[in-house]
Image (cartoon, rainbow, N blue to C red; front, side):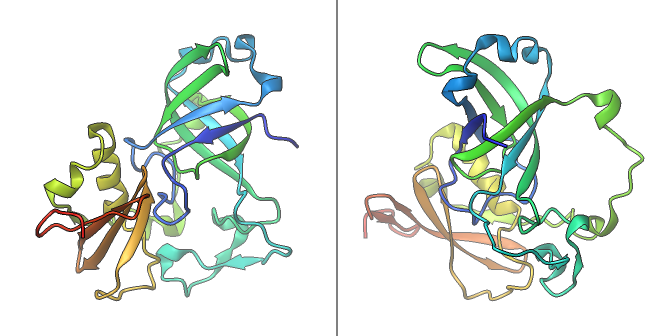
Length: 236
């Protein structure tokens, strides 16, 4: 297979990306087709659908071997399940699957059709293998059992993000970074309340620690190396 497109997101690194698509609807992305596929005819009718499936490559999770079992982070990193009972990136074929909301399609002179999507869970410049419409009649199964994922799906943190630091982000990205932190980016087996973590998002590195069920943002750094703290809000 070869990629037909790639996606632009605000995630230059894997840490902090939601574990599934749709968990943080405010996370936006733009799907840009490779030159060979930039025909408006290829997406004719897609605008009638509210959601689409993206099939993509785990381009940063390459391994020379695969394991029959994996340790899902949400299960504490100790309990093993079969690789085909998980959505781990470490699989025989590194193919990812995401259901995202299609906000609009723009036909541009330079890139042809560009898909604007929301609820993304992909690294910036992730290769896209295919795009398919989400069809509620066949794709939605309200009676479906969710297995071990039911144990952790309600785990969310409250977020203490000083308003002066939050204002560094454009308004349309503020809800996104709050959602990222609320989803608790840490592996479940890491519970060190003194440890400082950093999520790179939207041109900034957000430093935070987690105490109990609250994520406390303590500093924000930009790409130029300028650092802002919540106490005095000035460059350190």
